[in-house]
Length: 322
Ligand code: CP
Image (cartoon, rainbow, N blue to C red; front, top):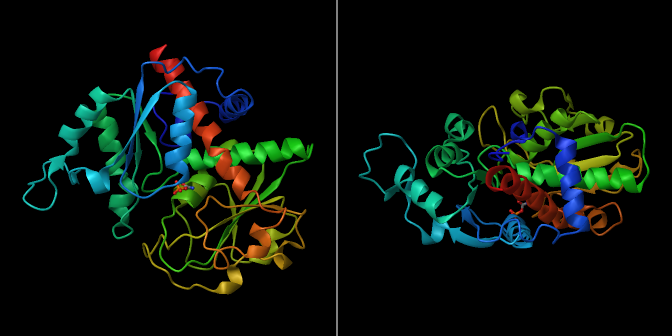
């Protein structure tokens, strides 16, 4: 891979999952691969899992990882081409990114959407400007519309669980909207849908209240219903996530607590495993009874972030630099 921005950068999803499984089995097998190389982790937003798991992954490959909290410690960046910089922005990405490209062999970036202007957010200008000007491979640590390292982790976790259960039939995987107290990005849901559709080895159903439709760019191929109970019937995996509205962009239309997943709702599933990317608002998005039960895969999922990141970095190092 030359970059990792979405599933479209992955020629073979199952091969990348197999690479992640191999990293988990033998984390230090390629500890010399990244020797003498530096990875820059740029954060324009907060993070626990992405920040730490990517650092651990890079160290396992012998790389030096440097974290830069751009939003708190850097100059305010301008991303618009031709901008007259007489406002709050101090440095253009056109100047900053090539400098970062000289310091680092791989550049990883986390940005969030504004949730104010859909066209701007869905143009993915921030990450595309870094790709254009950095001159080194760019890895998304979550962008305005997608979270590919999370989705790779999610598929790794699902694959492991299918193997553990020795399940040979096609699984049913449900992505369900959950309530939240504030508007959240659509990134995790978009990305999960995009990866599920590209993977194609499960019956994939999305359920959400009316008016919470995601972009068809990512959901195409999925069954979509507003009936959560019907969606959950016979499910093997339930992925829980809140997102704000896409059509009337970035709004919270309703926050019906009845959409929170409970043990009761899992009764018609195949003892479904429950997933969430974390952080999770307990007893708003997901009940304690589920999060603290054997149904929950969330800790395993978060642990797998290391192996997903390591597989991606290993692939980039192997193909770009060895
Ligand atoms: N799931 C996820 O990306 O977690 P962080 O925001 O803590 O990195």
